[in-house]
Length: 214
Image (cartoon, rainbow, N blue to C red; front, side, top):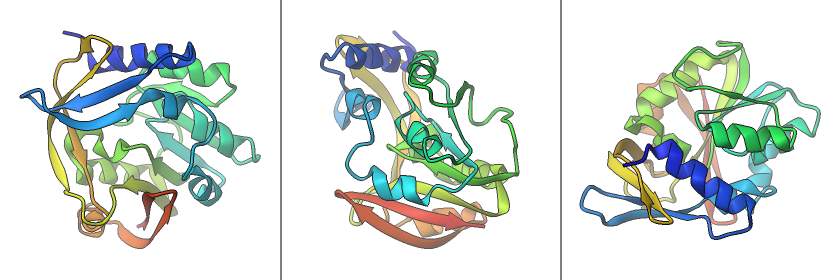
């Protein structure tokens, strides 16, 4: 079996060649939990990105930045920005496009802890680690007292869920790992567990986002 980061990296390479970069998150029984497309993360900002980019402060940390489309766009405005990703392939592609990124685990030591103006979890990254409250607590530790956390969530009416999944695509399937989904209906309660409050939500291009503050 492949590591999740290996299956993800292979999909990014397919996207870079203009090939089908579709992947699926599957449950332990093999049922598709969610369809994904690495190609959508690899190009220029996609529908729904603009308001998120506009809300990023000078001093933005993009957690799970992938191939860097968001952090490149933020940095292009002159705002200080940094992306972090555990995938070496994603970091290579992000650097090729000039995005400021580092290779690392967001739960490990990061530059400027406690001083970032904004932390971003987009493209489903609220699911990282399978424990959204713990992840938001980590975000809280990274931002300054007056900072904010911008999180992409699932639409109202969706199911909040955590469990184990595998990543599959192009005849590759990963080992299982913990993941989660969070509905817009539940983000306020989960944020409270991380000593954050819901300052507001917005929607663009059928995507939903939450603005959290300490």
